[in-house]
Image (cartoon, rainbow, N blue to C red; front, side, top):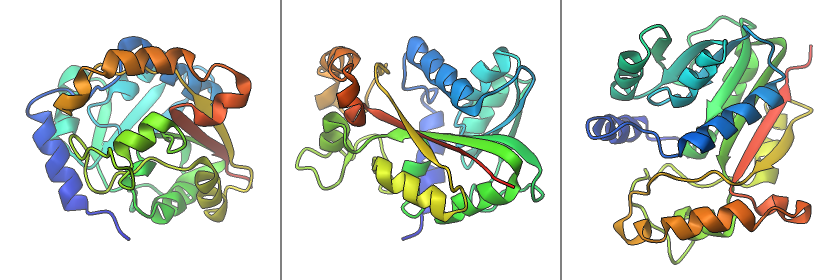
Length: 243
């Protein structure tokens, strides 16, 4: 199954006309960027390509921390928001399944909540492997299908699934499947990390908005025990391109 790219562009272009695409609180955004920097083992001044950057929330935060960033997205209107907010950062409209870079030319790649938009991510992963330099690193973060809330609210097999605010391409990911996909794409030592406590600013569904404070509170404390980490709301997949 392939991603419907026209549908993705139309959805996010329309969204950009009404709001900035920034679903997390500022504290959650900072926590995500800290995790990205740790997993990529970044040195100050490192170059990062942010795939699926949207309006550039994480691109901008990483740039503020002293990294050289390039934001890539399908939605020209979300990219327009990013350029307006951070004119010093380069943004480019491009397809993650056909990246406009030479072989082995990129140091670090961030996939910003992107993989779960790809019904079949193998073409994207192959492109990441192609453009990364030897010893280049990637990190991807996505909603975890093993998390009860992510499953119940955002998985199409759930009786409580809400299509409000998402495209039909989207589905939370399974951690073991992420490992399989990236290893199949050439990243033999792909690893997984889990993160909770990422509070949301809003959800699109009116019926769920009233429950958002309850979700944020529960997510902050429910999965703190190490043996419950597999059920945390977000999964980070990361690895290095071996020579």
